[in-house]
Length: 370
Ligand SMILES: [Ca+2]
Ligand SMILES: [Ca+2]
Ligand SMILES: [Ca+2]
Ligand SMILES: [Ca+2]
Image (cartoon, rainbow, N blue to C red; front, side, top):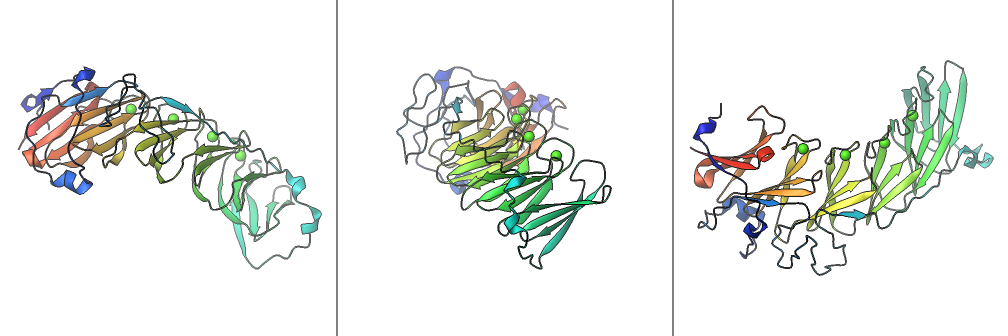
C-alpha cells in the first residue's frame, strides 16, 4: 500500500503568471526519455490552465486564450478550449429509397460469390437469413415465408450488421462506393449515403447519443459520420496530416467523441453537437499515453506526454492540467491509489530515483523516493 504520509505534496498554483515558458531546444521523444535531470528552474510543479488560457510554449499567446499564431499550412487556427462550430456542414441527404432499385437489374448476373448472415433484420423476433451476392442481398423471413431483394448496380461488400436507426431489427452496412448504403429491412428501406472516393471505414459507434450506431469514415481531408437516424452524412474538415486516436466519451455527455491527432493539435469531434474542439499542443513532440478517467467526473481524460510535463486534457471542462516532471521518467500507468473515483497516474521518475503520483482529482503531485 502507498504510504501517503511519506510523500511530499506540492499543491496547485493557479496564478497564470506562474506559467512556465520554455526556450529550450527541440527535444525529440527519445531525448525526452533519456534526458539527464535539469537544473532546478522553479518550485511550481503544477500549471493550471483554466478554460481558455493557453499553456503552450507558443510565444504568441494572447491574453484571453485565443492563440493568434500565424496560419501555418492553411490548416485551421483553432482556439484553445473554444468550440469551433462545424464550419463546413455537408449534410447530404441522399437516401434513395428502394424504388431506386430499378427493374433493369432484374436479370443481372449473380456471381458465385455469396455469403449468408443470420439475424433478425425486420425486427419481428424471428431470425432471418440474408444471402449476400456481389450485387444483391436477399433476405428470407422464415416466419412469414417471404423474401425481399435489395439490389445494387455494381459489386458491393458488406461492412457489418448493426443497429443504425435505434429501431427493432439490425441494419446491414454495405460498401457501395462511392456510397455507403444501409439496408433497413424493417422499413424495407435502402438508403445510400454519398461519401466520395478513397475512403476507409473507421468503425461504428454511437457518436450522437441517439440510439443506433453511426459509421465513422476517413475520407481525407474529411472525417465523415454516416448518421442513419437523421439520414445525413456529417462532414468534418480535418485538413492534412491527421490520425484518429480512438473513440471514447470525453465530455461526459451521451455518445463517444472521436479523438484526432492533427499536426500540433488534439482535436475532439463531437458529433452530438456537430462541433469539434481543438487543443493546441505546441511545436514540440507530444504523444498520447491513453484515455482514462482521472478526475472522477464523467468522461475520460487524455493523458499526454509533453516536454517535461505530463498533461491531462479534459474536454468536459475545456482545460488541461500540466504536471511537471523532470529528468528521465517512464509512465507506469493509471492506477486507483485512493479508492476515490478517478485514477491516479503512476510515473517512475527514475532520473530522480522516485515515483511520481499524479492525483488529478485534487490537482496534486506527490513523490516517493526509492
Ligand atoms: Ca434497427
Ligand atoms: Ca446514434
Ligand atoms: Ca460524449
Ligand atoms: Ca473524467
